[in-house]
Length: 162
Ligand SMILES: [Zn+2]
Image (cartoon, rainbow, N blue to C red; front, side, top):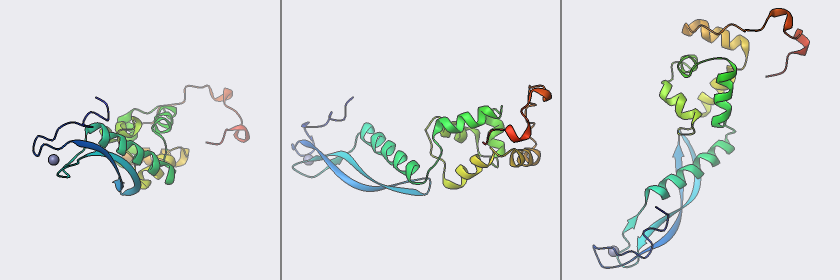
């Protein structure tokens, strides 16, 4: 289905025809807002409005990207990469973010949900080893042991900044 499926189609209720329109609205996601220009269809005769699933999805996608950029939130891939670099499952990672349901964390990684600023800060804080260990101890999560021999680890001064 394309965005223009309703364009020019008959509104059976009144005999008028739908035409493509745009509107600028404020969309709210996870407590944050963005101004988005989105498409919809309006009957030229009675002004009845229709919004297709594609139009709703497209507007939500634009809003998500605007909000993510404005608040400098992690992109889905960065969340997954951080979790994988720590050797944690989605369930374990979710436990460390104060027991966030793992379906939500999975949604963040897949771009299905947008984490709010608080959750974003919590996710970022796990890149800090001390914070990670403290949170893991509290949540009862066993962190994976580094499978690198100690003598092959770089000296403290050579550790890359995370
Ligand atoms: Zn109509």
